Length: 490
Image (cartoon, rainbow, N blue to C red; front, top):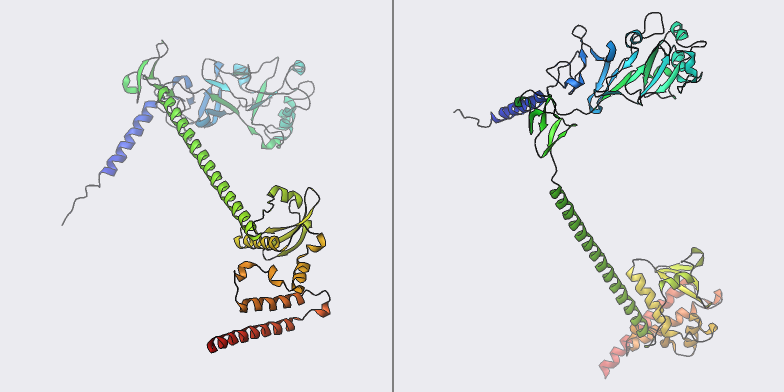
């Protein structure tokens, strides 16, 4: 069964249309054909039927080489063309045999450009003048023995030794100047009473060796106007064939609402100033609204963070009050604590543990304090530090003498007086703790105090501590059993 393929032809049709569009676009610009191996980009013209006649160059039919024809009969071989920068490089005129005179000297007295045409010499050229009159030594040109033209003659390899002696020797100097300024943008003059030959170096770098210098003369052309035409059929896009500037020359001038884009060589639509203003206003409004939203978000975030910090500080203060029987506790700001510890300096560290580091600090009134810094981001560490502060606030009256504030001494003193339970956190025991818990706490306290004895020999060893803990456990369990038996008998 044969099936048709309805989608087989459209790609070919599209390709054909694209080719036709490209053909009409290029043909409307009338780009000239290649001359030998060199392309001839628009607006350069090699015959009246292509390019722009104001940008005329010549294609030699025998050698198939391109030439730039200057005034007074001199021609210069075109070495390369760079259409993106509107520039071309030509070869300076050849030498006359056995002399230091170039062929354009007797023909046209050097290079002369028609200033009514869109060509000029660029400032990328460094010009060397040779076989000059001694009177040029006092000219603004650099005709000294240190002039770069001497390096060119001696080391470039472009000039043989015999001709080099003719170009600069004795009283006949060579000179150097940078082209592109007035009047060298349109002429490089040679004369029998001046200089009789010239050479040009492109983008001369004095740091390079002369044999690395590139010889050539760079000429640029101005951006082209609208293409010339004879009828409306010669024009394309948003243009029509009408006289240009009140002259008899007809060009494809852009229609109303368009302008000539010399870079693209086409008519481009003009931007509507109102639409541009509307776009700018819209962008401004959107930017302002975005800025307001961002600022509002930042403000809300800061407000939430401040609220959280305030609630956390209040909760901590309430915790300390509850641990201190309702008495107010002094709250120090981070700024004060940092100043007291010299910015938590490492040389102020007294010790460190699992929940943070302890620093030595000194308040503005000279009071020496210990500052414990909880580990950043560790909630458990922060809670533990607060618990320690609560216990200290509950257990010790810091208004007493300094010797009586020592926690260990305070606990020992309470233990010897039979009041060990006063230093135990009430949260561990509750309001009415069972006998089992009070007994175990007292026994553990006695063991802990034994570990705090001043002399090492009086303190129990680790083995003794383990045995004592095991004994305390058995005693508590035995007491628990006895209490259960007594309850059953009753």
